[in-house]
Amino acid sequence: MGRKRKKKEQSDGETIFGIVICIVGLFCFNQPGLAILVLIVASLILIAVKSNHQVNLKTYEPKPSVKSPKAENNVRVKVLPRITPAHPTQWSEGLIAKLEWRVFEKLCLNIWKVKGFSAQETGSGADGGVDFFLYAKTTKKKIGAVQCKSWGKRQIDVKVLRELQGVVASEQLKLGLLMYSGVLSKGAIEFMKKPAVNIKAQGPADILAELYKLPPAAQTRLLNEMTRGDYESPSCPNCDTKLLRRTAKKTGNQFWGCKSFPKCRYTMR
Image 1 (tube, one colour):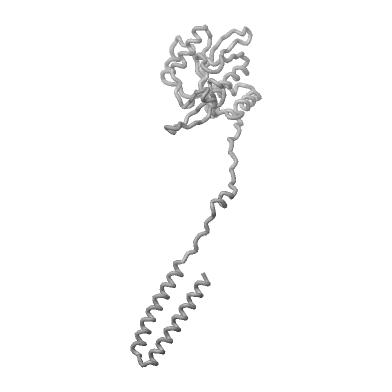
Image 2: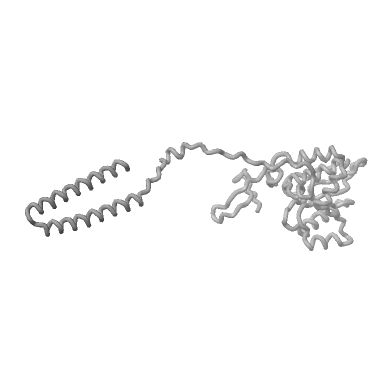
């Protein structure tokens, strides 16, 4: 920029010097009128050129340096560490509500085992209205059937209770128990009030009360076992493995799908 300015000033000086020589020559040839006219025109031209040069100096802005894509790609990007939730230190209704259905079933099963009962699971997949049976401590006789439902905000309808009541009646059991995390529908609540129905229900508050009845060491052991690894993502009832969060290509809706797809096509909303 300094070199261009010096060249411009040198060019202006040469122009003025040439005009002065021209005017002196005209006076020497006895043409003062023409000399004055040349002086006026030259002055106007020099003023216009000078003004334009000043405007260019004011409006000049250096061009920002542009980094090449290759150079920008070579800049190291700091990857933030994944923040994992803090390990729970005690049981609460909120924690029980977060447990996915498979972990929730294991918790319910182990509560009864710690209480001294023998409990036997019916197996994964379709359970026929029962997740595990309870057996007496001494006689080992089947005395109860337990159904576990961890449905979050979904309502647990009367169909679940009817299936459980059918098992209790057919096997002549003393107890039918629904251990749930969610919301009981109005129909389900009314169904349990019927005299012929021998079913009780335990929600998160009742389950928490049962946990607090256990020895402190047992509470801590169950807490560590149930919250080890991913205890929130649901499991596939067919494969007993964790489901994956997927997105439908056509609609863009998200859903849970089995990682064994296409061998297993189980999905959950």
